[in-house]
Length: 170
Image 1 (tube, rainbow, N blue to C red):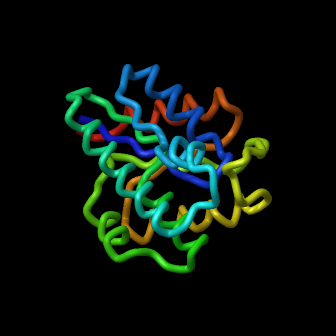
Image 2 (image 1 turned 180 degrees about the vertical axis):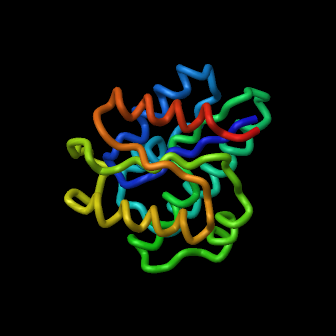
Image 3 (image 1 turned 60 degrees about the vertical axis):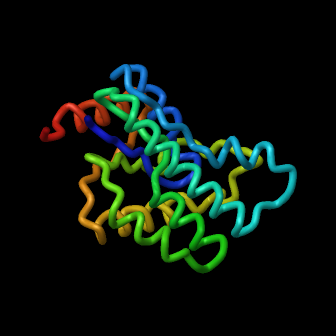
């Protein structure tokens, strides 16, 4: 089973790429639970909400593994949750930090913020794509995770991502 996490700053093409890859590989796609939750919330979120979102995202990841599909594409990962938590609240729960060390993906695809920013009511950080990109890159490197930077036009991104996945050592 190949596990690929698509990670990176908001509005950097994660969902588009994850969906394209899931179709291409007939993979199980684990969507970003935060979007579903926050759309229905009807108020500003707090630490308890983010904690719930994080736990539910990880639960959805674990369920996906049980599908038996040979490829699983994750439209977000635990690093997104950590960076979001840290930026919004200035701290990260210990359990979330330890999940980063124990939860493994075969490859992270780090999406660059080189696509036009698309405003969305759930997005909070316009103009900070490069700042967050560097945070993601540093986090991936500090844990020694295998990652590839995915940048360029949408068609180039898909080609780069497929090449990276096809070259995963099994």
